[in-house]
Image 1 (spheres, rainbow, N blue to C red):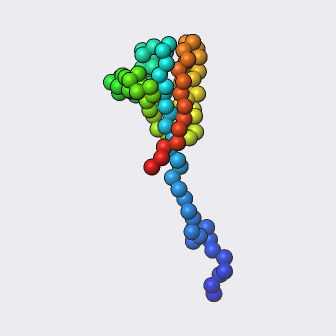
Image 2 (image 1 turned 90 degrees about the vertical axis):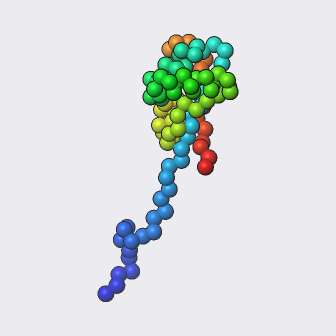
Image 3 (image 1 turned 45 degrees about the vertical axis):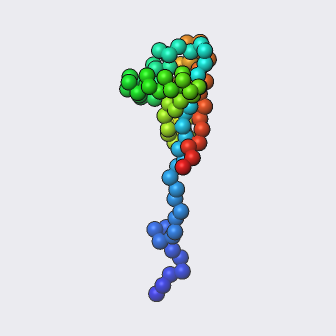
Length: 101
């Protein structure tokens, strides 16, 4: 006898990967390069060489990608960096932007 109800396993489920978001650091004339490198290493887990390269990209291009994460993780990383900047009195600005495929 066939049942008219489907189990959850039999239903078509349309799952998508969560969207990814870039944490962008913006250049300013006050925040020191050493501080930016330190934030990239401590908050964004970049090795020293990569942190220095990202810092130079920020300095030369006006902005650079600190990391790409799911939205919740990107917002958390931004908040951590914002807190460190405020504690040291730097105006470092970070934004979270959607990554487009």
